[in-house]
Image (cartoon, rainbow, N blue to C red):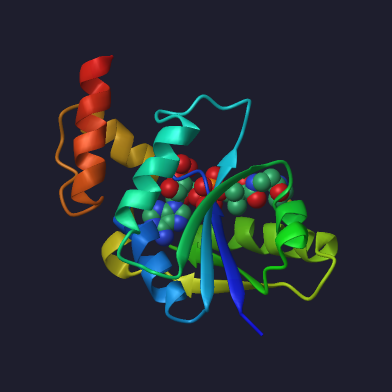
Length: 162
Ligand code: COA
């Protein structure tokens, strides 16, 4: 049976920390879906379509990775698609509290035996978040090495548009 797993998030934008989790998890599962959560109450820096395009571009070298989006409950999306696992990255102990709450709530909502699997974020990326990347880049700071080159280009284009 094909082992399918999911990695969900806002990815606004995707960082090298996310990409590191995706590359490592994609080696474990037969099929790995990266899904962008559509939150109608949150105006992103990048639109959902832009994020889809960016994530597809930076994961193009990974043949078993597909990119999708969903709205509503993560558990509903999981139940509809039959994922065996939901992968989460843990950066620091501060992530743990929130993650355990989400994992336990989701466990009640899964209709099957989906497991939440935690991978430790590479220490090189443990301090970054998408918000920090946007803040530093928009104030003219360097985010080289923290996000893929393509994301740097997209952020620059976006800031020029504004
Ligand atoms: N490297 C770098 N940054 C990372 C990272 C990593 N490995 N892992 C997480 N981050 C960053 C993200 O960029 C994000 O930064 P931001 O807050 O500045 O945007 C932050 O850490 C939080 O990431 P995450 O916990 O993945 O939040 P998210 O908003 O991207 O995704 C969902 C959270 C999608 C899993 C959750 O909101 C969800 O399930 N939503 C659907 C609705 C639902 O089912 N709710 C009930 C849940 S029980």
